[in-house]
Amino acid sequence: MTEAKIIDGKAFAADVRGRVKSAVDVLKADHGITPGLAVVLVGEDPASQVYVRNKGKQTLEAGMNSYEFKMPDTVSQEELLAKVAELNEDPAVNGILVQLPLPDHMDDQAVITAIDPDKDVDGFHLVNVGRLSVGATDGLIPCTPLGCLLMLKDHFGGSLSGKRAIVVGRSNIVGKPMFNLLLQESCTVTVAHSRTDDLPGECRRADIVVAAVGRPEMVKGDWIKPGAVVIDVGINRIEKPDGGTRLVGDVEFESAKSVAGAITPVPGGVGPMTIACLLRNTVTACCQQNDIPEPPM
Ligand SMILES: Nc1nc2c(c(=O)[nH]1)N[C@@H](CN(C=O)c1ccc(C(=O)N[C@@H](CCC(=O)O)C(=O)O)cc1)CN2
Image (cartoon, rainbow, N blue to C red; front, side, top):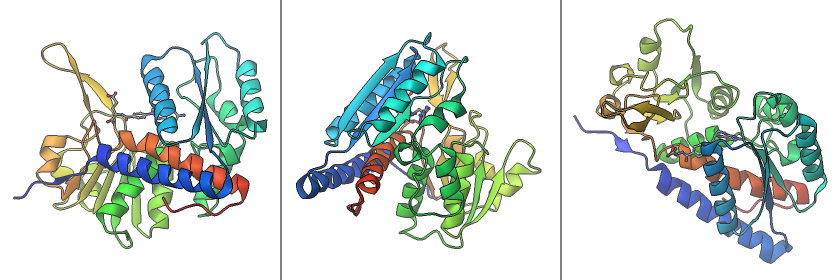
């Protein structure tokens, strides 16, 4: 049997960033506008520090302005909300992102709700959730599901119409928006979760499997229909027998790749698309705020 095509998320993300840069060049040349992205980091979480650093670097590389705000984890929610309010009013800032997770004393939803929905480049605000759920075209779409969709559309040559898809996981950040995006593409979509009966059987019916459940290597190769496309959103750090650690997805890659038609690896699959789509959303937000057509990306 032939092995699955490995979908190279790093290369795909680099391509998206290149298109974003070209769009930014058009905005600068034709409209004299440079999009700006503000990222707020609260606390010292090492992984979050890396993600925020990469966001700033890639924003600048795309030719946009990057504004980074670091706050200690002792900061009060009121102080964070005041920063968000200031950024909402700043015309140089087209996109605002508060890095998650926030410290325990903060209410994530209250902070997200404080962001101007038109600057909510994470697509987490209830207004954007609502826009996505009714198929509105002016919403900002959460970056990770958007990245998955772009990879799927590329694989299938543009149309997903009629495909049977399963999303394993029902989180607000990935599972639910992924469901809405696939439904809009005229897929027949199942959302599976911890209470789903016969999860392997449900997966075996799907042409597209999106695994976003947060459990290391839960989806096994014999759950995959031969030739199906597997998008693995999981990023789980597990211990190796020698005492070190390694990253694995929610799919058992080795067994799945000998059955699937195409599969994303972890690392190097969906992960890099998250930041690329954040840059894309920042350009989208900037165009909407200035009432100018979005250059193709
Ligand atoms: N406000 C937000 N917070 C968080 C988001 C988000 O989209 N918005 N997502 C994650 C973190 N994240 C970006 O913020 C992110 C996660 C992973 C990657 C990535 O490229 N991962 C690599 C592996 C990295 C490693 O070696 O550890 C990969 O999968 O290849 C990019 C961005 C939570 N918070």
